[in-house]
Length: 251
Ligand SMILES: [Zn+2]
Image (cartoon, rainbow, N blue to C red; front, side, top):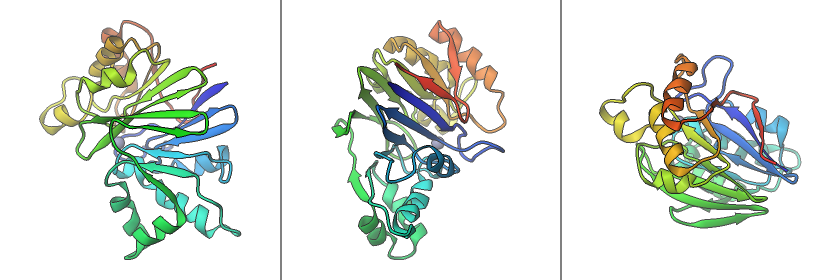
């Protein structure tokens, strides 16, 4: 039995009552957290507190995907007694961004307290029952899309990305494609290169043959139903909108 629980769906900052990016995967009692954006840690501690937490994967260094890694560091190191860290896979620049929150020697502190595994594009990592493949995707900072195979199911997650054919490889025949859809209409300027529109998310999901499309990473205040309609026109099937607390059973 594999299940995904949505912890947060807001791009940029956590909209009122929401959190930023975070998704908890669970398979046969083992958990893997994908991203730890603003406000996700509290919910993670309800669902899979250390030492139950099996692992973490952070797609990129932006605070709306990574900042609660600092909170997790504190949970692990300041709990009485301290808790052994699960493996924590981090994309390039994540530690440089997060460690200073712990002060001038934050990098050493995090290296001591966390079981850090620097992740690179085009690699495969094993974590309990999870097999993770990474894809380099275009964003303002290096982003690693991750394709997770577990229990005969495939879950693909973009993190944040601009348009790229790598997205099709990432989501090929996925049982669930969790795709960022920050923009509505036609993005302009840097957004056009480094973020996706809902319609592009639908197009890529269709090209990849993804069986389910879950849109996420919505701009705070946007009407999410607009994103659903724009994506559905391109995808040609039902499109789901991620929301905090949503659970998706994948069998
Ligand atoms: Zn983001």
